[in-house]
Length: 523
Image (cartoon, rainbow, N blue to C red; front, side):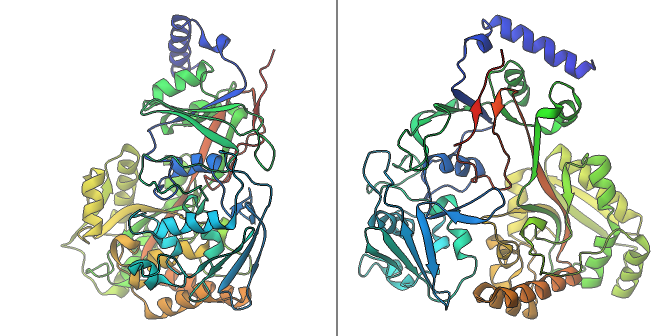
């Protein structure tokens, strides 16, 4: 037994005995999970974080949702129809759905719930998910008090009318912000709405725990668990000890303990992993010299040994990125050239082609204050030094780091993009369309008129085969222009107790609704 395992075992044993061995007292109809920090809100209008969205999936439902393979499947709507022009969506609601207060769901509830997201008095930070809805002017000015594009045809038929086709729209309806609640005129991060989900809110002790109880009348059948308790445990060491003692059932593996859980015989067969929808990248301010030169950017991309960093420093906890888009979102009919692999000779040739004299220049690489990021930055600094580029490292705490990127002061920086919804468009339009310069997503201030035309056409294209061709062309432009050096897609790793059954780990946080998972205490 190595030293780390021995220390964790002894401390865990002492804590267990000191607390009367809570493991023996606990019941196995309640699932305990850990969050590192408390969430902000359980109101879908205000949820912007992964953990809040995860809990929203237990409490609420959308018209549609995602399955484990990220297919869009029925939820509150048992089926839907899209008009030939792609601008009208008609949803047929199930007739057996009740809110947790006992009232039946109607199309009028859906209408009010969606209108609430757009209500200026509510000030939802995610109103953009419906900004394409017909009647945008009327919702902004509130002339009629209603949004023209939301139509309750009858109690069980609901329509959404768009100004024009928008291909990712159905994907956007799977987000937590499009989940339906029973509107009661309230709003704000403290408000906890009534939902239709498999669990019902029971208790929230801020900074300590959140408790949900089973909804016995859930329309897809009641969950196997009676209760779900989310424990807020900021310290990784405390969380690991509690997990070892059996007081936490599912634990996202802390980075420092990756080797312990994946190699220790007791836990290694209880580890789950999945690629999640994000891309880590080295960004360049494309407005600033010398980063405005595509040949220079290509040289940097080819000068970084991503394979070595992933294998030797990241312990293969990430998947190499070939483009800004995670592979799981790329249709097999989309074809493009991936960004250039590590090739110092090619990198030096591109530097020569750029015509820039780097002998008396020092580049600055800005990164967020974090031990792992510091190590990554140092390896990138070393690799670029090998092709003749002198790089200075600048480490900043998160607020100052974000500010420097937002203002354009950071000329070269390490950042990541996480999906708001599972569609290829979400990794290309916000991040590279010139209309989104700055905080909207295009933090590298990239502009290519040909790319802009392609991505705008792809977003409104109804024919899938035509859309695939447009995305292929757009990705090839990005591979050639290199506004990002695409580094990797981060994986998520969790470890579970042996009595946890039917657990799965999905690439999107709000896929799991907690219906199948159960606990079977071993004798």
